[in-house]
Image (tube, rainbow, N blue to C red):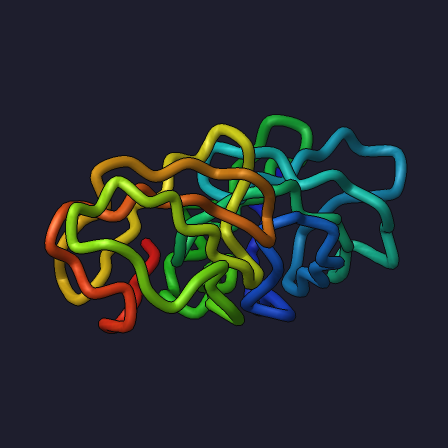
Length: 165
C-alpha cells in the first residue's frame, strides 16, 4: 500500500481566465513517471505537462472563472484531498478588470448597449453580471475574455461606477 499524494505548494496561485497558466505543484508521493495521474482545479481538469519527480509536477490551467478552487492530485487512484487541506493550496482566476467603455453617456430612457473592454471577463459559458452605480444592467452578455456588453437600464447615468462579477 502506498501513501496518498501530499500537496504542499501551488505556484502561482492566480492566473488568467483564458487559461494557459503553468502551475507548479510541489509535495510528496506523486508517484513514479509511469504512474497514471490527474490534476483538478475544483471540478475541472488541469492538463499535466510535466513530471519532474515524485515531489514536483506541472499542469496548464483550463479557461475558467472563480476563486479558491481546490487543487487535487490523483495518482493511481490515490487522492491528495484528504492530506492536503491547507487554504493556500488553492488556485484563483484573476478578477475582471475594466479598461474602457464604448460611450460615456446616453439618453435617460436607457436601453443603450454599452460595450465594456478589459480583461479576465471569463469564458463563453460564463454569464457576467454587470452593474452601473449599483444598478444591474437590464441584460449583459459575454463577448470575449476582453469584452462584455450591457444594456443600460432607464434613468441610469453611464458615468457612475461600473462593476463586473
